[in-house]
Length: 163
Image (spheres, rainbow, N blue to C red):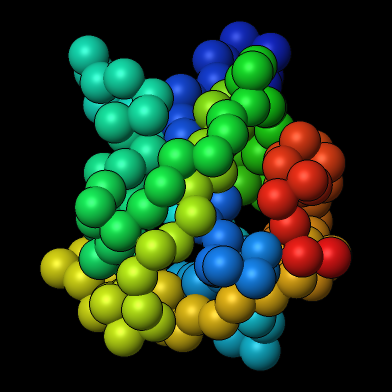
């Protein structure tokens, strides 16, 4: 059965760019990356019904990294939704085939804690490893179909970033 992406909505989602005091970006290596690849990304996830985007961002950050709101300083956010479409080979396979891609609100938070306060061994872990990286390295490390999103987010938050 052929799925027409034009008939599907975008999934409402948030993304979090977490930076350290030096302006480097937190990147997590996805557990579900295909063998032999290193898919790195920033924390992100869906917005629950009735949830405000900023609240969703803080929830996702906690769920994926163990970093709670007390350990971050809000710095910025995207004004508009940033959207991407799934590639044809993933359309109909992720999110039970209900969405053509995601529309995301992105939030920039400065991490105020210590590295040992980051815990990716969560109840439902998403990452195998994590590191602080520069902006260009973050854009280079994301899967190709999300690259334009990361480029746009880096451009928006550039004044706060190291490189």
